[in-house]
Image 1: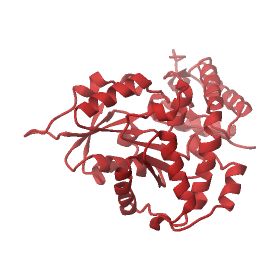
Image 2: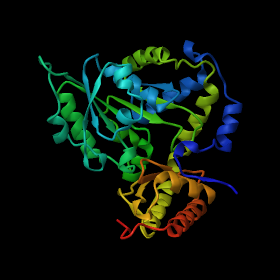
Image 3: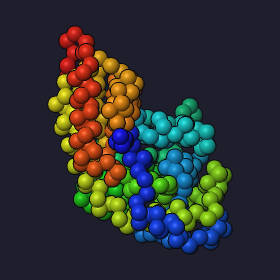
Image 4: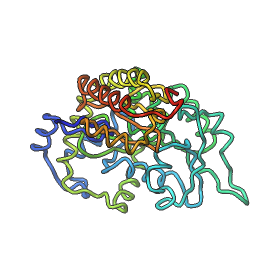
Length: 353
């Protein structure tokens, strides 16, 4: 039985076109700046985002870590949303590498506003850490893949810049946001000082992320990448897949969004299960507490039915659609979830929340 893996869009395998490009990639030593395929990828990423330069990094965590370091000094605060990836899922790198602490703000659907941020910006003073950076996330992973509207992003950037600070965007799935809004990523991120986006998530490349920004910032970022052990050598074999991902994969993201809608609508009809966030892109978060099982047991029983989905905590699960899980796969996964949920004895009085 073939497993249907909805744990993340990181589980995708490289397409045939990516494999061919990797096999035939022209390579050199990237630490010396001599890998032509990496150079093309960085240039192409900068063009797509309307920035001066780009930097190929092994992971989104490294890209975000470098960006925080670029824009801050030790002892400063980084304003971010309370459920943000940079705060909760990157091993406290803003503290470990940059010497900064987070100033988390809880926002509805994970979407910060300038009014919220303005009240938390701290100037240099005797008793508290000054603000060094504002970090945004679009789409917002743990808010169900929610999308920050263009006007909200622009207003935040204008206000933050007027305050003399910089804005970094964790745009791991920014192409999903652009697809949902129907605008180019260049416009959506025009006012951001730096943007990190992932090739290895929705775009389906086997590895890698990019950081884009000014030429000066990317030159410094290259040194931080080396300090973090991210100096790759003949990395063109990876960058080749990234170039295919940028060329071919954004146009098909609407398919993933449609499959996520299918799953969300079906989940809300299953007794004991409730979708907790509006579904705009390719992420669905749902509460299974009404089934009477925790997510560890629910995941184990789903695996017996050939479906892989992870829990976020004891009661909430997260699934992501991607190009390796088509419509029939999603329909089969939905049937498996329903079969597992209905077969379980629910607690007295439990049901859809």
